[in-house]
Length: 262
Image 1 (cartoon, rainbow, N blue to C red):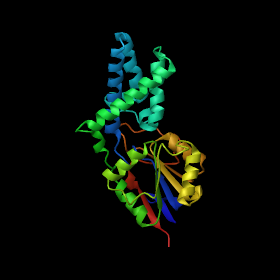
Image 2: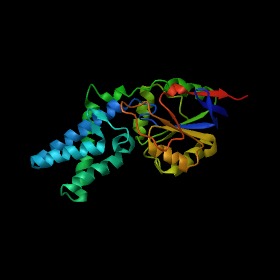
Image 3: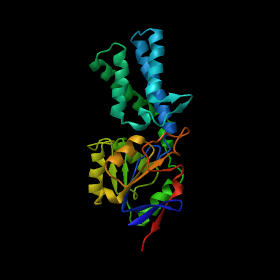
Image 4: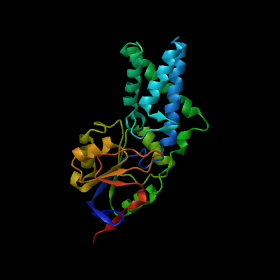
């Protein structure tokens, strides 16, 4: 076991640690901001083709901006786009469409179409902003230090398995993570049973594990799974997230370090 520290203050002993991805290890705001804007524009274009009047188009844009967390050319770290899975965002988008008089089947179908079209558009864009999802400062050094000292490292995210693999490949992290948990694993986060099951796969008890994330949903999940060390991270966003479920909090990943107990 190693001792996890914030600066020189001990948080406790751990055998394993679970990291969130977007906004915790990955500089994802720029990509997510572009994703949100593109989904809004594709939705507006779709509604215009359906001959929806201009006032409803204005209202649609306003509602989508609100649920995606878009404001003043920035993205809220507490929004659905920043925290929830793609499937959950499809449902929240379909709910907006439902308010405009479409039945649920039609609302869900339109939402799925838009998300698929946006994915194709962004993947075909030569300047694809997803390539800019670089590691947050201090992340690599922390991960390497944990790995070298025998700590089991897991990545738990609401991204897809393909999204995780792209993140790992583009940041040369192939030998870092011992376990991965995507939106496709069941149960998915923020179900605390996901943490408990992940700890089983890591062959450690929850009492020997820590979690670090920029989202209250993750921090509460860890608390309900009885993890003893729950760290909120605020340094991954222009406008830092509001975290109320944290046990400890750091603004920079280099505030975290380890002490080897011999």
